[in-house]
Length: 173
Image (cartoon, rainbow, N blue to C red; front, side, top):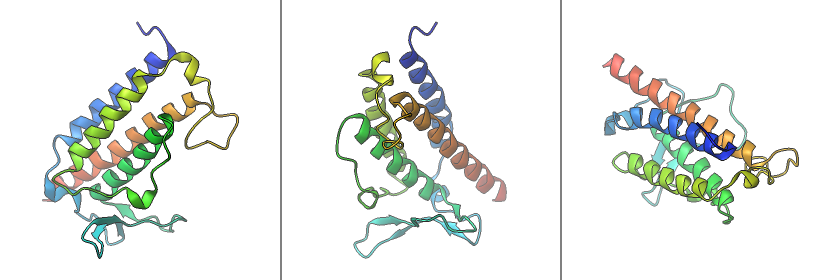
């Protein structure tokens, strides 16, 4: 039985992460940059040799189909920023969150998961009623509980997209 509201948030995160592991554990390096459509967002080598994610401040119309590489970068970006906020750190700039490559992406995400679990472990029910640090930091009606629920929902959405792309690539081979 769940004893507190934060226990429910932790449980929901654990459930979502187990779905994430189902797909992350099955990914092959070739899956990451497979482009399922002509109009894709992916990651590309920048002039410095680092991976740079496609991005637009205003979402284009039509919305590009993301690659698994882009989705793992996107997940790493918003999760890094969310963790920064929850831990009271200065948020990392989007352009400073670099995709580590297909061989390291899964371990990178697992490291972010460990940091998030640690942050959740320090929270209490009383903390949940505090102001939302992200992504609604300017909305006085949103609380930390809203932010934590958003992380769980956003993770579940990204995991579903990664899983669908993985299955489509396997079916198209």
